Image (cartoon, rainbow, N blue to C red; front, side):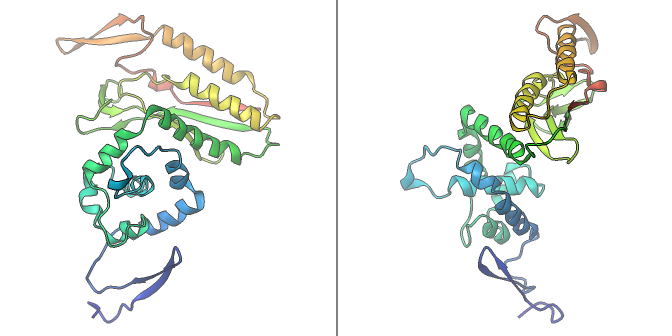
Length: 281
């Protein structure tokens, strides 16, 4: 019997399945939004397309969880605020997550299994994933577009453990990752992202990312001929990296020294003026 008589069961149709939402206090979940997330994912074809790019090198006789199921489990957890992989140890039993990942009535991947999944992805497969993501944006552009505005910026992603690539950054004054993000400035859509170490210079990787995107945009939108702004930005970025100063620490006091490696180990990293808008017109 329901725990309250004022709330009647609600019947829904999800993925051509009969789903009943009730307040009977049995198998409950506080993350019902994962079902809406799955509906959006199906419309975009995001996880299905990405899973198709991942190789399968496991013994098929011992496989319990498909790559698609594991990818959805990890992506949906992150989207709902469960970035820590340890959360999988109890979310794997959540009925809403199981329904969204096509794993009804059985436990999904545990934290060690998801960690093995993440580390099993090769560098070539990672390159294929971000290229596919970028092409998804490029393919949606109107070929007759004459204006495409790219907003590129680095941001701080604070860390609170001993994660790989997590370092202290002097400008932000905490341990962090330092990802590079590129958005469509007109629609706000994320185009691509580059995970970088926490002590990376603000412009690290920007030249290669912009060059790749601009070439793809020009092929898709011939009328959006490149202006001099992109070439000017790349030129200025290279000059700044050549003049970069490495900061080391001696007796808790920063000591500046010239760097021949053209990268900033710590310090402000040029972040005070790291935001750039590149316009093709």
